[in-house]
Image (cartoon, rainbow, N blue to C red; front, side):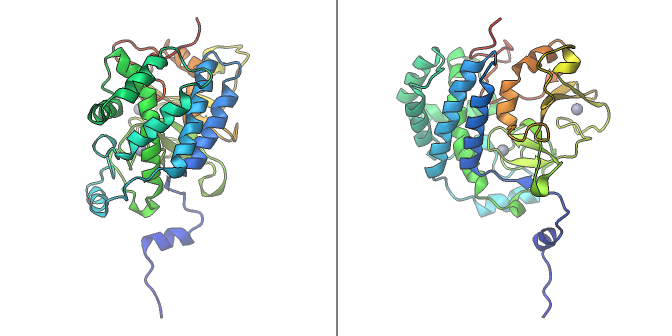
Length: 324
Ligand SMILES: [Zn+2]
Ligand SMILES: [Zn+2]
């Protein structure tokens, strides 16, 4: 008897079709990120901070192995698909499991090497903070509404805990659940702008460019000719240290700034073909020098790195920047 093929079956049969969405495998993701941050901490102007973040990512890996978030809501999925909206927008779907994860991370990093001094009172403050205040802070961190310097200092720790619960939730979705969002420049799962994009190697993703969500770690495919911020196909260019600082001794082409003449922004493209261990969020942090050089051009950074909080009023890292 013949069976009618569903769209998912057809995609599975067609080995050549690009993988549209890569859902995270959180334990592996945080383990890879921790290793990459430790590797990139060497001879890096913000090496101490990267080393601290490597310990934080290792703690995220441990938390990800045991965290329990609520099962994705079937009704919310159907509604999002119908309206081409992100499945579970981050700020309105914070899973209460994040409190336990935050406590776990605070315990794990309080004595971590490289712990920035200004985070010592922040850790104490977050520990003592009532849950409702923590939830309010979490929502402000997620929408980027941070003006108080103490909230800015807390942001990387809050984001690290949120990343664990959002990645866990995303990991339990099926590719077929993920809507096609409009615009295609925000995460189809949680609605966050991508932190960077990555050219993947291996399997069905080989040679394809994915936008990487800094909140839930979902990756979604976007053709390379398009700007990852405004979707324009005209005037896309790449700039690396070699172009920006001729004669640069560290002219590594793994991370390039992709610039768009349409919206005058840039976002980094992390190329695994140049370095298979490259990890979008870690490599973005490890190339702050590229941001400093881009700061002298007329291209603005399209979106921030969630583990390096910047205030709108005072663009510059709130937690240790490169030594001048
Ligand atoms: Zn996301
Ligand atoms: Zn653009």
